[in-house]
Length: 161
Image 1 (cartoon, helix red, strand yellow):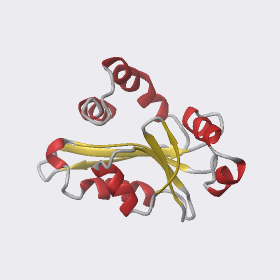
Image 2: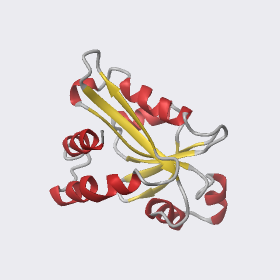
Image 3: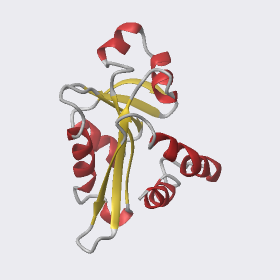
Image 4: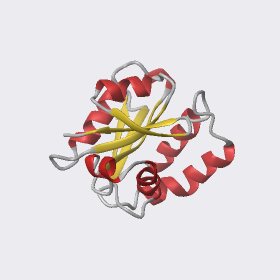
């Protein structure tokens, strides 16, 4: 399953507005993706069309102090904000991607919602989204995510129970 995820990630995140470099794509698909799969409470949700064709995915895991993303976000906010968003006790929605032919079909909402439903009740979910009004950001906002910090061109967004 992870090779399909890696291939779709590579195809998706070289596009605007992300424009990831070939080096960063290789680092993600060769290391980061597999490291994330070893994190506590790692969950992968995939979507396929009626014919079984791989259409997209969302994955996440339990965020914890010591993880790169959690530490980075903690450094961006004050203590009260970190406590409000349960940093270190949250569930990170790490990556979401859909094949171009599957976008706009409701599959993105389905994989993200399914991923969140698999977390324990009362879980705060966090993610990052490009600041441009991409369909992904619009989806997250429609699911109740709110921006509370930024790093570069990315917003840090959270959804409390």
